[in-house]
Image 1: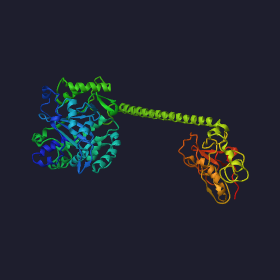
Image 2: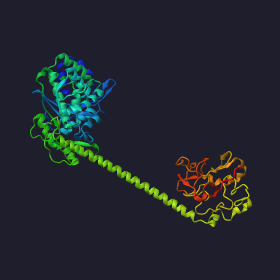
Image 3: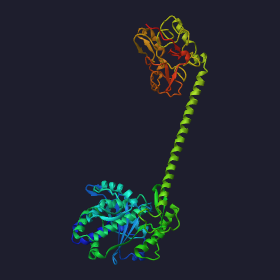
Image 4: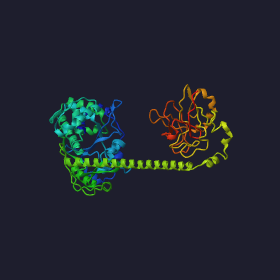
Length: 584
């Protein structure tokens, strides 16, 4: 925005103060790489007598005491400054930063401000040249601090502020203070406001409340006000501007380019200004988002050359025609649009419909995102239901398979024969109080004459095969007097009968296959262990009984109560329950 001010002020003192150029930042810039080779001699001749400079405003931060104005910074301002060296008229064209153009020699299309971010001023100037049929070879880049400093030194500027703009400007003032480190204050009333540098920058940055097109109009208003102030400033003030602002600029302009301006400074003045593209629309271009679309690029270039150079019936180059066709094809905007000259900064041209259109697109985008989320949730729910169904089927198949087994099936499973008959009266079925499986002492075992190993029937647990609705080995606890300890498998036995319970401990070895990994589902529930087996596995696991806990067993991660006929009974190695042994 402040380019014209800096150029003319620097020109006035350049031949006296050579040191100012040594303070400017130097960026990689090859003039040969930006020259437009697509232009004919006749097209170049039409531009003769005009000094053209590309001006970029970036949102950079200070690095090592200097502001970074090279590539990697977004160019919020892309302005073409054309100075008629004969008449002294300065024309400014603001290229809207979201304009969809060809931005690189790799035939890449994107928003024009991406060109500076990717390749710095060299790529940005080259992009302007090839899309607009220009031949700019010089540039100047500044940041917001340079503008604020320059305006503060000039004593501020007077700008008419609408109530709509006032409602937005204070947020930008706060942001600009934080970015530049320059103090300012909030604006309380609309009307003619004397703005300091930060306030003027904030005014030029407003892009809400009307349109982005009005934002560039505000930038030109600030520039015009600063330029008018500079023309009436004394030499000491101008020199202060140069000394302060020049180190914050990056440019390839030479001192010899400025001397002709210095010789006749008073004749230069800012003439008309425009925004490019003049005829435009908007479209969402995939990953590039909402873009400003020239309608068409070819017709806009014709109007641009008529505005800058007074060329009638300009014939765009073949490259511009090619770019124009591609943009129309991608955007679907093939017809030439109506040129929009200036945009009122209070509400913006057709601001109401513009804002409604933006709100509609935002709502459609939000609806699409919500639909995508719902579809993803539905797909996940369906997948979960399928998994749950498969688990249920597996559990049912397991229950059906083992639930139909009789004693002969289990005998065959154990290798044939009633091997447990060898135990005699001291074994299963004995009621004389002897130790071992089936004894009436505390510990794993069934009541005399009840369940034998390998003879569990449907509704009871079988060796290593606890299932929903049955007791799992080692998951119940016995109440007894005196001290007690937890025995392998998780049942609790009296200390006085531990020696007599050795057979029970041996008989409970089948419960050591694993244990459930779940935690108690509620306070007071039975203890639990860990298991590598899934809930639908045919083999349950042993847990660790907690003294005083309820007789609720865990199987496959769920708390399962004993069947009514097995309440308050300890689980034996075969899975059926026997009464707790007497206290010592």
